[in-house]
Structures are given as structure tokens and as C-alpha cells.
Length: 145
Image 1 (cartoon, helix red, strand yellow):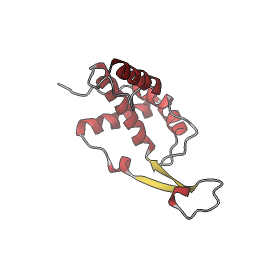
Image 2 (cartoon, helix red, strand yellow; image 1 turned 120 degrees about the vertical axis):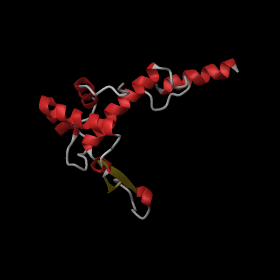
Image 3 (cartoon, helix red, strand yellow; image 1 turned 90 degrees about the vertical axis):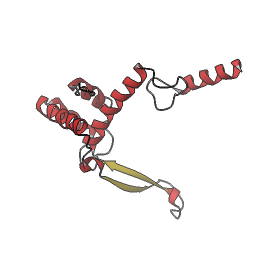
Image 4 (cartoon, helix red, strand yellow; image 1 turned 180 degrees about the vertical axis):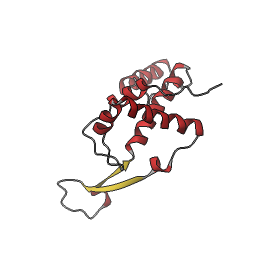
């Protein structure tokens, strides 16, 4: 009995469609724009899905996906750059690894929400939840108390 259903092409297409083309390329020199073009090729997308499924089935996340590089960028229009807070660190990760993580995250969140594994008051980091929802929940708690 398989615990994890193999990934589908649609899951990857939906995940990558939401990604901005204007973000910086990753450590592997790929950008979301590149991955969007690559995944339009059926054979390439199938290979990415095969890698993803093998990562799950083997329970192994390759070191290649774990590599990162941090770039320090000075914030603009600062009078002095003597303090660390005057700089912005940007971490570059492997974009293929980020894509696979996005698809895994989408699936896990869907399963957790579908099966009511999350407390109704949990709002942070969830799809279709907003600060308005948090305000409504807080107002309800205050009024009922």
C-alpha cells in the first residue's frame, strides 16, 4: 500500500505558474522563467516528476538541493554602513529543489486542511487565511468572553 501518491504533471504546472519571473536565479543559475520554459517540455517535466517521486520513495533529499549561498546587499540611501542592519542578506537556493518543495508543501497543506488536522484558530501560513480572518476570530473570542 502506497502512502504517498506519485506527483502529477498538473501539480507541478500549478505550483510553477504562481512563481514570479522577476525573482533572482537560484544557486543553480536557473530562474522561475527558465523552469517554466523547461517544464513546458513534457519529457523534461516527466524527469523532474521522476526525481521528485524518487526523493519521496527513498526518503532522501539530495545534498544538491540543500546547498545555498548568501549574498549581502547594502540597503539603498543609508548615510552609513557601519551596522549589520544596513545590509540585506539574500539566500540563493537550488530552484529545482524549491519547486519540488513547493509541490510537497501544497499537497501536505491540502491533506491537512481536508482532514481537519489543524485547529480552527491556526491562521498563519495557511492558504485562504488572512489578517481579516484573524480579526474575525479575535473579535469572536473577545465578544464571547
